[in-house]
Image (cartoon, rainbow, N blue to C red; front, side, top):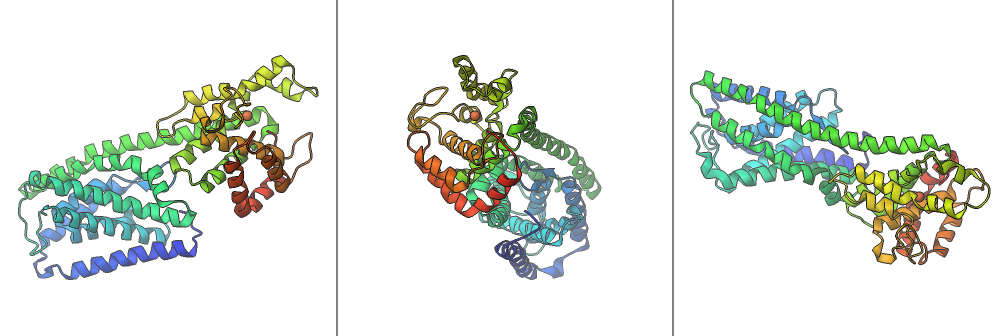
Length: 444
Ligand SMILES: [Fe+2]
């Protein structure tokens, strides 16, 4: 989320916490507060300290947002204190965890956590789950959690769904991207990991039933060790993803450093592929894979004999054409070596970026639908960028001229649907790209 917020984003991020606070207030007023003893208050305070501890040093996600293992604590708090008190504990930890954070973000997170805990609590209760502190009279009673299994699963799932969809909603409103697309890319794959720490929460609630009090505190404190280990492992996988994205960027930078005429070419092609893909409503994971492929698409040009061929004034010889035509396959080989499960088919997209709809392209001579849609998009973006960029030997052509050229070759070289999508995308984003084209000397 950026700090410059549009009006709909502002309305969303302020109304969600206000709604959550109002809901919590109504539920809190219904608690039998005359039964709120000192012991419960101290236990809630102790739990607040644990939640703050678990929430410190959050793990950064690859695209947007952060995550902490506080979920286990929120879940434990829920099973112990019931939704209303647990939601208050979780919300009270937010300002401590999000220090030096703009007010609206703290406010937003308070609302998000209140809603998540309340929703999870009532889902758990609805499915037959019980809390250690009964909401009806705030008295303590042991619970056999093995009999609340359905509730535990439902509560955990509801917590994760409410929590992640609330954040995905904010990103969707502020960026205009599809809600499910954002959720699928940034949250679906980690929902399982999120839920994996839920058993810690259940175990903590079981341990909380231990008497006497001193042993209970010691046992709970001990739980911090595996919880911190889980956080460490999760942080490791997130950092790996970050490193992956940086590797792609570094490879792309290396290519551009090797050949200054391609400077910013990959970056602009990447931006164009994203515009076309979004215009065609491609799923978010495909958009991401396509963008990674766009950054890498010319990696195959990283070879010692490339520059003399490209620089020479006459037409390339047959032998030299072979070298030129081998760059998609060479690039695909490099891409295949760094491909990961989260962003599949990057190598395939790189390999097919010079295929033509009429089957006269290279390296495989694929036709029409045989060519991956992502590769057809990359092909159009690559050509458009080459035509509109400043080159050492040609004058810059306008967007209209370039589109005219692409339209002329639509159906033979390019997919007409992709060319149309580019035209539509440029109609709404063209100005921004035109400025870039004027300031950046580039070549295909
Ligand atoms: Fe290429």
